[in-house]
Length: 248
Image 1 (spheres, rainbow, N blue to C red):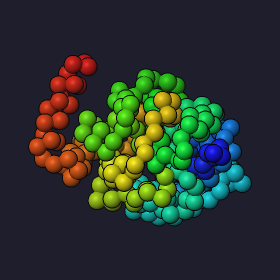
Image 2: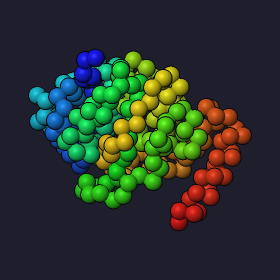
Image 3: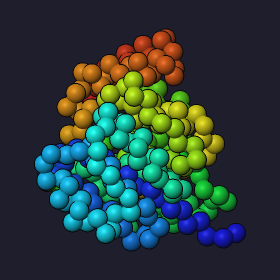
């Protein structure tokens, strides 16, 4: 059996992201694993974002700057530009946990006979300066299935690597939480979901869904009803409240 050597299509979506973008780009360029396709989709930024992109353009495989219909529309564009085995979204402010992250992921799957449909792992939260705050409170389960997200989004979207061949478009009906719906729909198609047991991502703890928390939670409720039904969703939301109170 030959060594598994997948290519990762890493997609960064930006809009007026000059404050955080360079950290993300450097994180990708620092990866020791060589089989990377780096794609950047900008929504016609008006700040200094494009100057940063142009500075690193020779090392970015594909990039575009044009008006879009929002974050998830831009992410759909990025997927259409991708040609790698796996899709990974790493937006401005987010970064890989360490330069060896992708290499360690690839090393971890060498016991598999073929590439898993989904690779997943842990997420660390960082502040605006990139300093570690804490590990994400919702931890990935040992065995991930599409039903796992009844308990909430147990795997951060950035730490969820899907094979491009089973990836689906983001549903633009959702403005803040389409990533949760996207992960569930992919997991329904996936046959082999592989737990790397690695911390993969440093996630900037101030994303769009954080800034729009009320709207995001409303969408997440709708997504859970779509996939799990009303009864299951209501029961699990009572559990979410109890869990939040206990953790406080």
